[in-house]
Image 1 (cartoon, rainbow, N blue to C red):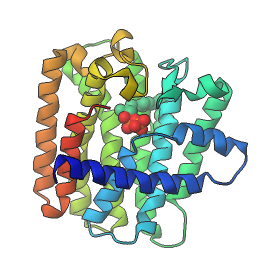
Image 2 (image 1 turned 90 degrees about the vertical axis):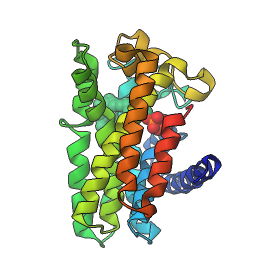
Image 3 (image 1 turned 135 degrees about the vertical axis):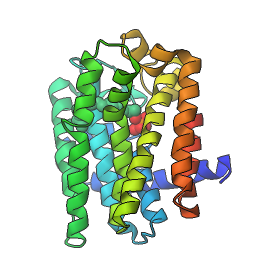
Image 4 (image 1 turned 120 degrees about the vertical axis):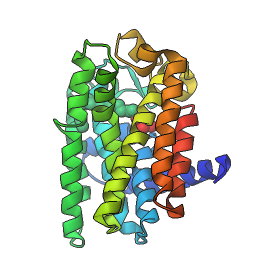
Length: 289
Ligand code: GRG
């Protein structure tokens, strides 16, 4: 795919996800409006990866993957809301607007995150078909968003003092890469792909996830305020362990390219149907927001 083709593909998938999310938040008590405020405006990279993986694995019925894809976005948003809290990163801006606690106060921000987490599991388990697949989806997701995944990554992010490559890898792997990888895995599970393919997509996804966090760290320094949608330079000035902080900008860019290359080799080895994932890798490597 050419650069403009992958951009169009991503925009189309994002529109599908946004429409579905709007429906999931169309009704409900006022808390749903508060939750949707934070859900609104993300890039939707995780749901798009689930959809792309589902389709590449031969999945056709869109209704099978959409609730799972949207549930991933709800969990992601929940983690962003909590990440921004005064006791965590204390960020006033998220997705180009006041973060949840700035807009609604800390208590409502925490509660909206709690609500998003529970609502996500409602979406993961919705309907009476493919119960076994949904069980594996929930099992796989629980493993990577909890104390051996995102939550652990955040603990390390806050507490890690030892500025060595191993620490950086551990933070990136847990905070970001496992969740990106599991998004691909969920798409494959819902397409009833073989265990071998499910595992191959997860392990390729880890490299894409490491790349994603590298580019996030790089953009934190060189990204434009107008496109970032969050407070620029926050991580570097807060003394966080980041890729450019450890390796310098050029070193971080070089290593990002290496992660991209490994991810692309892995996707290429799965056959042409997975080219879209290689194109997403290129997009992530070159992204400006
Ligand atoms: C609630 C699961 C959960 C965990 C609590 C707060 C916390 C522990 C973890 C924070 C983890 C975190 C914020 C990781 C950063 C991941 C990352 C690169 C976020 C930016 O993702 P984008 O660029 O953002 O996809 P958009 O806004 O486009 O969705």
